Length: 304
Length: 291
Image (cartoon, rainbow over all chains, first blue to last red; front, side, top):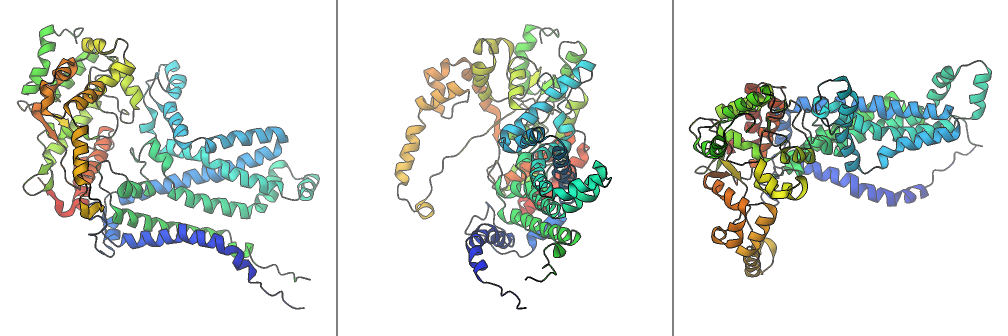
């Protein structure tokens, strides 16, 4: 039996997308890393900068804030990922599957609302939820009736709010992917497992979730990288104050956001460069843990 | 303040006493405490400084004798002593009950609504907010404002040191030919001159509550007729500016972040000050003088 010859046509189909990805993803990364080896900033402008090698990276390592910001970033990413993006997404998908179709669909649509609301409007709503009485909803409903002292909740529990704000948005991504993955599990297995005596929970644990390994890998990896690099809702919510400065926001603040016009392109690029490294490390760990190699291996059954 | 027992003279003379330095920031906090104790003012509504990041806060660093910029050497300065005192003052505001602990981060619309309607005994505001309040937040417009609110310098932290205020002038820059490739520099200059006339700037100043930028405006009738602007113009006698140093943004960011930490109680004033200086030394390198 002749082994099927690998065709080159596939590469031609990939070329347009490949060019776009190269131009808008790989090239900027290369440029960012190159800039991180310079001292480019508002002070030097675009014509007076010089190459400083690893000086920016050294500065990051001795910077008093680095460790704290890194820790906060890890807390933010892991909590949002585990409790919302993957956890909640899986939970809603499972629950919606077991509800009548219309009810399930209705709740899934509700969970999409945070994602489709414009970010600023959405975060503003959260700010008004947390505000001090008599303006804030949470204070008015849960503290005033009990005579408890009221405060602006946001500065006190800033990281919690960041996780909540991003979590409600993020859950819908996992929810959609897991939902469609669960739907695509063969109904034979689903029904026969119940007939064989498995309970709903057993079926979820032993049949559904193992079948979701590929979507789980995808959502976890994608959302980890997405959370590592996204900061817009944190920026609108707290602007990094109250201990919520995450790494990507730090990079943005240093390189592109300064009221007095002091943009540190070199230092900010170095921060971004480190973020790329962290992202790659995470991706490799996930791919190994979820045994990506096995998932995409050629099947052992010969083709006829 | 009348309810607290201050006589009309005491109230009227307050701006003067602040200008001279006989009424300091500590006096202000004491007044707040007494007001809260007497029930005249709600707890946490004694002193409402600016709720969000902004250059206004350096006024309190300067109020305690801090220096920001050394003109001779063209370098930024950080005075550890003044910094500690400034941070401690911000923390004292919270501990004395004048300001709530989770106050920073209060949204502007909430802040304006409270302050314009007399919700805070003392507050830090800008002259430009006057017009905003009269138009948008206060029934009765400017008249109500004049009746209920007063204004003065920012009190000093050191007795005997004059009160100050911060101005934030901007500079018009015309790009040179080598920078922009354009040869219309003279045209641009004429355009700027035509924009920034006594008439036009006065119109802007009156409508928005900004102080004028041209000396000729002092003698210009519509400017003089604006009660608020003529009353507030004396503040320009003892003001200072944020320095025009390219790395000032970094100075301020570090100053601000540690100020927030100290005010909220996450760090002591000493730790906040030393962290601030550590970061400044790292980021500003040779452009910093530490006192």
